[in-house]
Length: 118
Image (cartoon, rainbow, N blue to C red):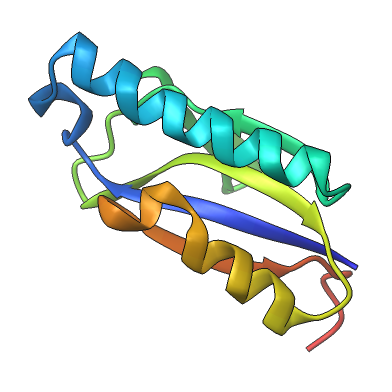
C-alpha cells in the first residue's frame, strides 16, 4: 500500500544554513532514501525548491486565478516527499520516525487513496 511521507518545514529555514550544512543534511536524506530503496520500499522521492518558486492555481468566477509564491500566509512549506510502499500505516509511521528530516521539520504520513475514501 502506498504512503506519502511529506516533509513539512518552516519557511525560510533553508536560508539560515550554510551551503555545507545544507549539503550535509541532504546527504543524510539521500542515505535514508537509499536504505528504503534497498529494502524495496521506495516508490519515489523528490526534494522541492522553496515556495518562492511556486504558483498556486485556483478558479474564481470561472476564471483561473494564479498566485505566485512565496505565500505570506503560510508558515510552513512542503520541502519534499518520499512515496513508499509498505503493508500497513503503522509501518509507514515507523519509517517516518527514522527520517532524518524529523529533526528539523515535521514528517507527515499520509496513506494514498482515492479522494472519495474517508
